Structure formats: C-alpha cells, structure tokens
Image (tube, rainbow, N blue to C red; front, top):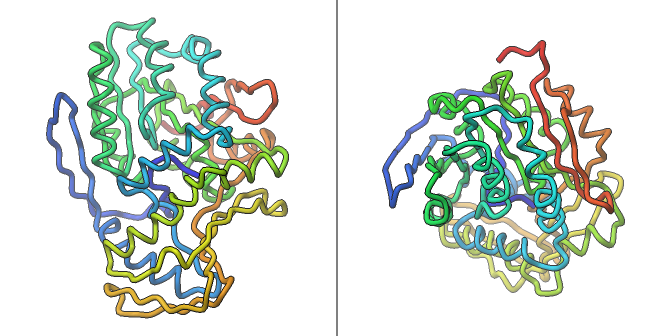
Length: 353
C-alpha cells in the first residue's frame, strides 16, 4: 500500500506538462497537470477491466477521501509498516542526518501528512538554521492542508508543495536548485513496484541527483504471512473502505455504476510472488457500465478486480535492485524484529549526475 502518492512508473517518455503555481497561506503550491494524467483514468479503466484478469491501478485510490483513509490505516494496530518505520526514525534520525551536507533541502515522494518526516525535519534543524521542504503528492487538497500545518509548526521552514505524479515532478525538481538534497521515499512505497518497476523508478530518480544528494527509502521486509496479511485486512475494515473508495471515485468521476456493496475486500499474501494482492471480489454475477468509456464490463460471482500489489523484499534483493539502478547502500537501519528497514542510498561514483 502506498501513501497518497501516485505510483506511475512508466518508460521515460515525453509528457506535456502544464504547471500552475500559487502561494496559499505561505505555501508555494505547484500543480503539475499532464496530458497523460488527464487521459489516464479512462484509458487505465478501459485497459484494466478489458483484461482476463481484471485490474485497476492503485493510484486511483488517492482522491481526498482515499488519502484521508490511508492516514487512518497508518494508525491501525495491525499496520506495522508505519509504526515500525517511525520507531526506526525516532531512534536514528540524528544518525541519519549526521553525515548529510550542510544547507540541505528535503524532498519527499508520497509525502502524505508528513508525520514521520517531522522527525527528520527536527534533526536537520538541529544542524542548520532553515530548511526548504518539497513534498510531492498527487492529492492537491490533502497536500496543501498538510503543508499549511507544517508551516504553523516550524518558523524555519519554507515549503514548495508539488501536486504531481512522480515522473512529472522529477524534471521540475531540477528547476528548484535543491542540491544538496535528501530525497525521501518512505512508508515502503517501493513495495508497490515489482523488481523491474522499482529499478526504473530508482533510475529515473538517480538521473536527477547530484553526487552530494542522498535517497532514503523505507522497505517492508519479508516476515510471517499472518503478520503481513493482518496489515491489509484490518478488523476495523478501514482498508476495506479504502479499497472500495476506488469504486466510489470511478462512479463520481467517469460515470461508472459500480454497486459498492456487491464487492468484498480481501488481500492475500502470494508467497510465490512475495507480494500482497489487494482484491475486490464480486459477490454476484453483474455488469458494470461506465459512461465515459461507453462500455459495459461483466464480472462473474467470485471474480475479482486486482487493485494493488505490495511486494515484500529481503535486504539482499533490494541491494541488487539498487545496484542495478546505479545506487549503492551507504547505510541501513532495521527494527529489532527485522520487519522493516530504512536504507540510505547514494549514487554510484561512476554514474553521471
């Protein structure tokens, strides 16, 4: 499961960008729209529901309601990911920042409410007088609310909030003159990528990094199946509401007629793939019409729509992916149970900046 970021890992293709910048309550808000983004919902739905194994991309989760539901998920007792990562950052934030350059900027892909980020902000402001923070998230309204809250808490902070897909945000970061920068990809957002997608994403980030920049990644590790599955099938059914909100969004935004209570949520761990699969299982034989595609899609009883993957890594596997993408592990920190790792990556010396 990702934070309220849009996971769109694509082959590096040209995207037409339209940037809108405005200052709201002290936050410099940059909204990046692309022709790809405007067209992607309809095309993604048509493509995903036309397949034998029906699927919908996980970035559709993150409207404002979905972003708020995800923050509730992060507080659940079963959701070890946020809690364990935060414990590591609480214990090691000063150590993580210790070797960082002076006059550091902080960039975060999939910033959410920036809760854990505050631990790193505090550590950085122990070393320098001011800090420029650049959170990147696809939900503009949620991003703005979170950024305004940060400014009320930190007088030394300036915030450039980028409402954008990851790929669209990367070239604009270069225009911000942010180096040296610590770039954050926390919350095990990397788990939404398979090995190939993770490598592409890391390569894309590395292309815009200088030798003095660092990338800090949260990685959820392989552990007992019961622990993993509990995190995505909570007893309070918040994750179920999060998963079904995707259908509500499609009903609202592209004229679908999903009957939400005719779907069940289930997220099994597929050991052979080392991943959680989020599913919406049809309770009956049904047909769904989508106004903006002009098409109907049939689902049989017990047929499911695959809405998200969450891969679980070993450190050895993650190191292999990082090296293939042009990075070296500079340091890594784990919790006592070995459930989660926070990994500091640096560009390999033979990589172009």
